[in-house]
Structure formats: structure tokens, C-alpha cells
Amino acid sequence: MPATAHKSERTAIPASAIESKAEARAVTARIVVLMAELRETVQQETALVYSGRLITAGKVAGRKRELAAAFVANVARVRASQAYFRRAAPDLLAALRTHHRKFRLGLRRDLARLATARAIAAGILRALAKKLGRCEILGAEPTEGVAERKAA
Image (cartoon, rainbow, N blue to C red; front, side, top):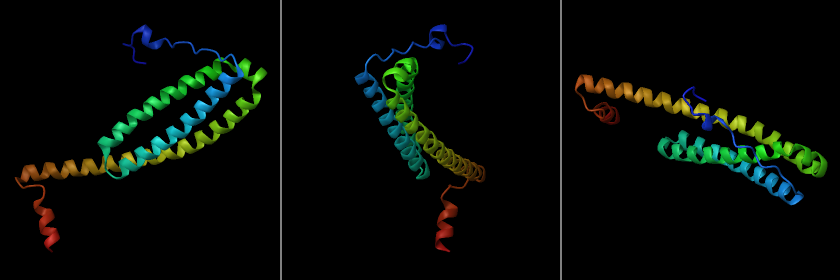
């Protein structure tokens, strides 16, 4: 957090503890769904960046933030309920850990692909901006050289 953040912004709201097996099942199922949606969203964002649809990718990134916030909130509830899970639902906790391990590995690959796609897009945009800057200096239209190369 930045040093200028208000104290209320730095203070996390404590996660509510899980108190029943049904609630434990619901929360773990929600986390599994959120993990799948997060991976799918990152993959969709990557495809959009690779295809040059950066504005749309930015909108998908917003959805990714929402999913990540929901994921963190639900995981916090599980963490706040560790004693309950160990006592009443160790099978759910073990299954969740297995899903999470797979999720982390897949997400790591997906995020690496997204970082590569963003780096490529940034490089293309820098090259384009440089080219457009040269055209302005020379007083030429950016498309003049393209038409000549197509004719050749």
C-alpha cells in the first residue's frame, strides 16, 4: 500500500468463519469455480492481446480483478476456518489443496504467456509510434511507404 493510503484502506475486514459442512462445501466449490474462471479469463485476455485487441483486453483485465478479489475473499474464509476444516471436513480441504496446486501451476504458465503477449504488443506499439514520429518529422503520411511497397 502506498504511504498515503488511509488507515481504513490498509485494514482488512476479517473473514467470517465457516460453521457448517454445507457452508464448507459451498465455499470450496465456489473457490474451484473461481479458479477455473480466473484461468479462462487470463487465457481470453492473452488471446485478445495477441490479436491486438488491447482495449477489449483491458476490459477483460477488469473482470480478472473482480474474480481475483472474490477468490481472495473466499480463500480468506477457508484460512479463518482451518480448525473447522481439519476437524469436520479434512476431505474438502485436501481436495481444495489439490485443485489449488494445479491452479497455481496452470496460472503461472498462463500469466507467462500473457506477459509475453503484452511485451510483444508493447514492442509493436513502440515501433509504430517511432515510425509515426518519423513520418511527422518528414512531413509524410504514415501510409505513403506502405502503398509503394504493395505496388512493388
